[in-house]
Figure 1 (cartoon, rainbow, N blue to C red):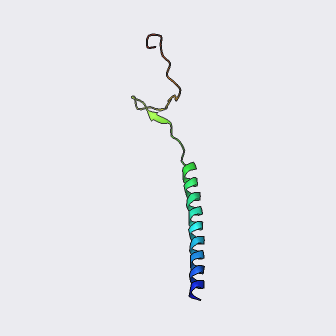
Figure 2: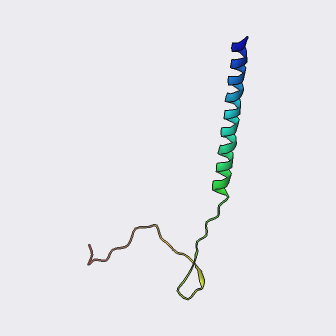
Figure 3: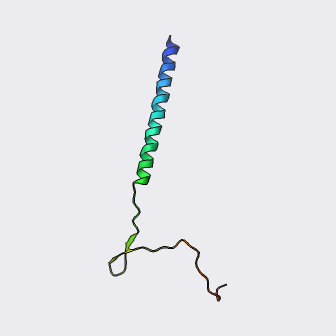
Length: 65
């Protein structure tokens, strides 16, 4: 009889852990998608401007190649 109680407790623990992991994954997903990207910066005059950063390759002149 004691082993039946142990099995029920283990199964309940597994269910709780699985539910906790699901909730944690949902919270992390929600937090990752809710953060907007701020691409504004202050220039040297103190004015706020949109940052322009290119991820493309740099063009090379004939002298540097």
